[in-house]
Length: 351
Image (cartoon, rainbow, N blue to C red; front, side, top):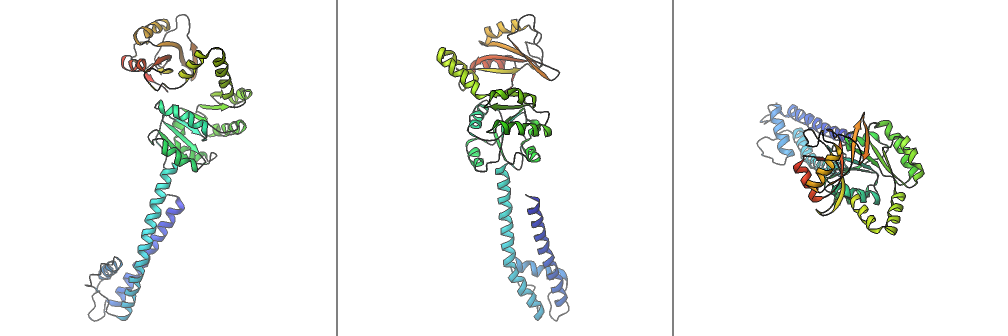
């Protein structure tokens, strides 16, 4: 509930309470020494007022003076307004709670999730693969009309949606952005993305950022601005198109492995972290390559090592390269092999 709405509610309830407190003591003052009075104490007056407001009206305590009955008449009429006030406030409160939940203003506890800032058709395509891979996603949009469609298509356990102005960095905290694994800045214009990333990094400097570019010449500019990954959509489309022209089978396979495997027979490339206690720790890369192919029909294509916070990707390295805990194995596999890896080697997937 907004602070201003909360203050209004407290003010109105306090005013009502003060009004009836005055009524109770005024009624007791007028009635306590009258002949045959039923209101010898202020508790009797309170009982009468409460019974009247709630329309119970036991009749065991009633005012006997003219002035007291006038006050009782006021209490009876005011009770109609009190019911209207209470019902309207409850309705407003429930509507506010529902709206806050729908707009994501209550926040989320997602961790190691993907934050997508900006919503469009390209974002829809990206999120379909992320959800299929079991990745939790927080979508931040300033388009109110898109909220309902997002909530309709995606489960709240998988996708959290926040309606916010992108420049309201305090409100972005609702998406638990500091605990995100990566932030995808998904705006429509390259210049708009660049300006926004520069400002965003002033508030969230330790996060990983990814953007897609229409102009591939801006890749270095974005990287210098602190963007972790830059992807040029035109370059990818052009490479796939050329591949379809002169090697269509390779192009089909390349397109397949870029996406998350939907069935057990589909292939894709996975990046998996080597945890403590894994059987490959201390093994040479070459040995792991042959063991994975033999036992799980997995093709090991690379190894990622993290040194001083920097990721070093070695593509099919040669020589005596040793696998250590915390490294990442980059492998091509189908769904069946993925199941074997999780059971046999206790490798935790990082998607």
